[in-house]
Image 1 (cartoon, rainbow, N blue to C red):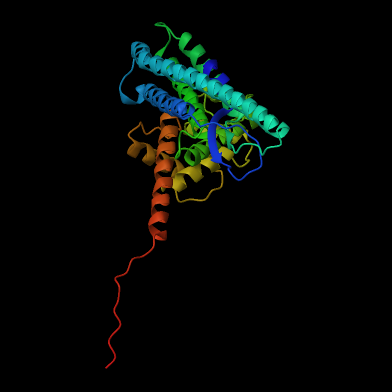
Image 2 (tube, rainbow, N blue to C red; image 1 turned 180 degrees about the horizontal axis):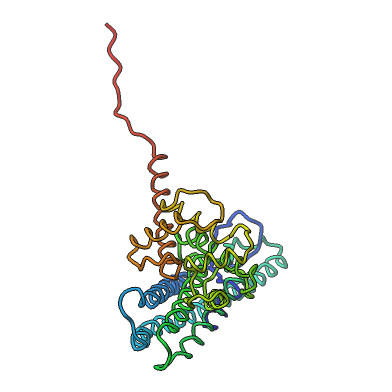
Length: 356
């Protein structure tokens, strides 16, 4: 996936021309070719397809009794989508480089014409200025995608027919979810996705809070990045092992209680974040106090029941996906409601009564 990262690491450059006939500035005269915009559009579409393939792959375990064979079979369309996204990234890079060369040549020609006009005592020719607009993709996001791609590849390569299914489940779904989240962040920052930013941010706040609590308890040594990957799942397993609990890799109620004990009565950041998410979705109306409760567990199970996933009372990758989707729906409903409220009212014209 370094092919795509090398494209975005310097920023995707889009040509945007603006007229400057009355300006004294001497700049390149050129038309903005649609190649980069078309290539970016294709990359966005293929990136979105890759995210959908990751989502489908990650949900294999929630739909039926899976086998290691199901994992291998499900990986084929995922790899196809990944290759397509890489190819689109290569095309985008080529389009960017071509247009940058064209702009550089046009600027050189414009400077030469301006010098010739100056020597002849003439006004410089009127030009059209061409600006390069950088799509703001952060270095952290790029690094997150690269790390998630490497983690997912290493995880899939480490699974064979002898791998226990329970072990494959947690490691693969966590790695797939981490990759999905990092790609969504990349596509959102690149301007490909309009409605994922806020809901994705709220889910990442919850995961970051989980990582923070695990770090405080001495189990998590990684970066607090809000991405639930294999490193986070491993830290949860270490917590469970230390407390004699089954190693699920997810924070189930007994693990929540064990973590609360190890935090020595401190307010749990991740419980507060979970309370906030469920309150936003209407499944919890208790206090935001960082304390695990039966009310919170019941609200989480109710959400899972309506989501159609096992009612475990633990936040696994399927529940995290559900949070993100439902939060996006809530955000969109609020936008639609605001738009309707702010729409100008129309009234029928009235006619003044004629004087008697």
